[in-house]
Image (cartoon, rainbow, N blue to C red):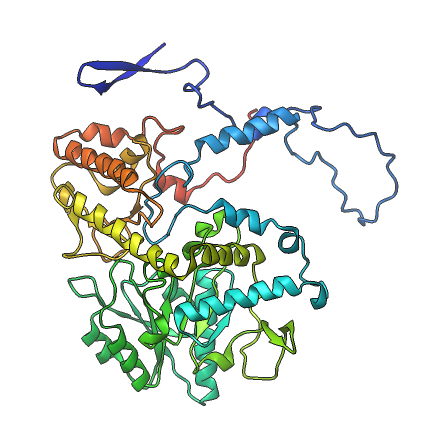
Length: 508
């Protein structure tokens, strides 16, 4: 066997890191692609031969093999179990991605989402047969409006960017109803990247608003940019620097005085839920990522949900459909002849996400949701303070739910932000959000969420302190080689992005 390197485990002991014969490392099994495992003639089922009859495919029937791998049932199960063991998850450890709210998903929520009355219904069932499900949607809508202090809500948007589209389309419809053709939307540099894309998709030009040295929107520059051609502003609060926009009421008043509307990106609602009602701040539209704030972070690898709450000014233009209680029965309103800008999706929304979110709310209660925000902010500030002396915070003072560092502490070390991220993988952690937000050089954005205990944070902080000290002590090769202990080594990321290999080809 070939000895690759010596890895010290403590001051008095070192162990050999070995190349194993089959590529496995202890309980972590090496696993090839599923196409490389299968072979012709192997199957996990036993089906009788079927006599071929004339088809109705008009000559388009497949002439070659379908090309799917042939495996037995144990091979299929083992393949996907082994892949799952290579995947980092919130169930395995702290997930520090900033601006992503990757937190524990309570199993109670999953149990409720799998109840037959929610999981097995069909969107075309008669409404009389799904009264319980419609009531659940109505109660969820009520909670969201109360938490945000807003009078109306659209539940059909499927995720954050879809919610942005909903809000901006409502703004555009309101302007058209006023007979005004405004062409510009203001977007702060600290906003999420989807904001300018959404504005452009809706036919508006985008004017960026700079940030001040302390990471907030430059209010003076914003007011100067206002004019009769401005349709509104798209602002993230708390912003992507992890800071609360302290001038938000002044900003709302100014855009309203100019005849525009205020769209707030609610991706970071986790930091203020139960503490601040966006409606009290003068916001006209805000999406809420149910799959971030209220369970199943980031869609859980599947569908998300991005309901949009609306002010009185935009409520008449909300998309169809919506749920109402009339004469003691719940029904879905498909068309009421008002000024709605139309439909966004084929059906009402994502039932699984609705159930998870409402379960999360009911199990926490009003006081528990308030504590969610308080604990998320406390945890982020704990991380910020514990790392302040070895890493460089991007801004002075406290943060909200995210601790943001820049790369100044790496100056002169030969180690870059990307190297630091790869070294975290060797330590057993998924890296934090790197190089975002763009307004910060070499950004490292950490969001511990309310999920993590002090013990979990102390372990994470200890790891980052050790890495920061190692970089400063000249261990450059350690960082450039990382990750060493991951299932795969570092990619040539530029080539992988520009020339991705998307299809497996058999070896000849």
